[in-house]
Image 1 (tube, rainbow, N blue to C red):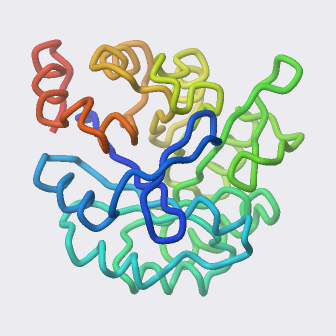
Image 2 (cartoon, one colour):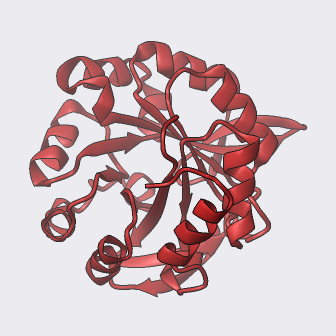
Length: 250
């Protein structure tokens, strides 16, 4: 059985790490380079870096900051935000990213998923799905959660898997920042339907929430931000807890 991954997420705005609730009410959470170094020393399995305003502002992800963080980390490092071309991907991989995460650009141009997978390999392609409820149905949101689409989350996930995506980063906007637990039902449905790994994101508040998402879904990783940034859940403590619960972690 694959060992479960614990993944801190650095949401970046104007070069600083930030965190919100339900994708709004953003507050500062510290220097991304210092946080990245800390997570490596604490035993994080991977690191995700998302420039949360890159798409909204029409900017490219800040490649120089990616390079600085990549220099400090020796764990898999995924970068997303404002990626819309093969050239963007090439710049980020050259800057030290191990994988790229795309959301809005994939929705605008699904063939981009295939192009990136064909050029660099499926293992480099993470599709971020920001999921929100519209008329009692899980829909895909774009532009940092600001705009709903007509795409059903499950159908979209299957489509990008066929196009060559190597992994899904599933964030429930309803649960994001609430610390009330992950979207178990949605995560379970997606993780059982797909043959590629699913990372659960949005809602972590206690050790038990990680236990629940790993026991009740087939998610291979769980991502969190503020509980790690502010020291509410130290990663070594979380991993020790999960091992005590007979959950296989690295």
